[in-house]
Length: 264
Ligand code: KIV
Image (tube, rainbow, N blue to C red; front, side, top):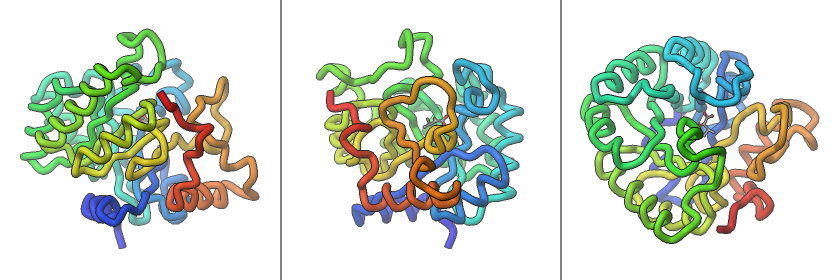
C-alpha cells in the first residue's frame, strides 16, 4: 500500500520508526521504494552529490522539477518529498507558484528550510492542499549565515527557540518537521512536543524517522564523512542489501548509534 502522510502519523502514534532516503532518478527511486523506504526525498543535496557544488544554493526549480519527475517515474509506493530550492519560497506568492510546479511533477509534499518566518507561507501552502515539511536546525541553505555546517541548538536559549519554532510551524500547518544536526536530547524534546512526525539526520535515535543522503550511506560521497553518516554498503553484498539493511536498522532503532549522535 502506498505511504501517505497518514501512514507517518500512524507510525508516530505507534512509536514505530520510519525511514527516509534521498533519490534523484527513476532507477534509484525504484530500488529505494522496493526496499521499503517510506519516504523518498528529492533533496537539493543533489547540488552537491550530483552537480559537485560546495553548497545547495545553485540548485534551480527546473532541476528540482526534472529530478522529481524522474523519481515519480520509478517510485513504487513511497511518499515523495521534494525540496524547494534556495530563495524559491522567499515570498508567499513565489512559494505557491513553485510548490505547485513540484506537485505537478509528482511530489506529494514539499520541504522548506527556515524558522518562524515561514509561518504564513506554510499556512498558505497547507490551506491550498500542499503538505509541508519544515526543516530546522542546520539548514544548509543558510550555510553563509551560519558560517559553515555547524550543529545547531547547542545552548539552552537556542534550544528553547527551536522548540518554539517547531511548535509554531506545526500550528501553522506543517505536516512534518525535519531536524538536521541538533543534539539528541533537543531532538527528543521536539519530537515529544509536536504532534507531527519528526524526521532526524544527525539528531539522535529518538525522532520518529531517520533520513540520510543516498550517496553518503553508500559511502561514495567524496571528502570528509560527517559524524551522523554510516556507510551501509561497507558490510553489504549489494546496493539493494545496503538499502534494506538501512531500512531495518532504522526500524529497530539500531541506527543511529551513539557514534552517529551529537550529545550537546
Ligand atoms: O537536501 C537534502 O538531501 C536534505 C537532507 C540532508 C535532509 O535536506
